[in-house]
Image (cartoon, rainbow, N blue to C red; front, side, top):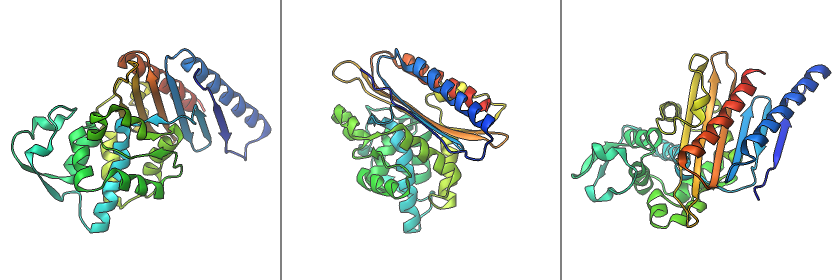
Length: 302
């Protein structure tokens, strides 16, 4: 049985009584809508919505495999290491051709395949974030910062440490169940996504590049982004994660975490994680899209 735990925290304390009542009713309404959206989903769905005035979580106590969502965390750790070493994002790495896995999701193989090559850290980060490239992520782990070091760094900056990063894409490919070792709560992910757009986490030039890459993500356009009206948004940034099939034939993970900034300055972050889903990837994406549309409408009308 899926656990449906919903916590609603109201942080706005200066409203008049009538406005408080209206806000309370709005939050009850969004809670009921989210219940209805996930009630019949054949898997466990976790949701976290964070704005200036509200935090709403659904099934936040579950450990959700992050899959490629962790590449966002990895990018922050890479930036930290470069900054400490006094290196810039245009620093280059020499890569031997045999370091690449030719049997994994890797758009970079179109340009880098048979011969040894040099590539900048910036280009690897862009491949890793915008295209969710597994080879790019594996190379960054091998040459810049390990999964364990990534975990340690993010714990120093994160507001919510309900996550763990312990293995790379290559390790998860070899032993599929290891994906459950790279996990996060929805709230932890939503807060971190919000932090990078609203706080200083690493040096400005590094952070600006990561923010730009998150805004250029081309994977999972049918997930959180399905709710976005381009004319109203100044920024929509996100990072997806997609899992393997487990022994029961379930999708281990289907995720998206995002940051939404309206042109009028209002903003929120949203994380939706789906674990052990008994259906297709398209069906899982539709679940995420419907949740995003529900939250988008709720926030827009506040």
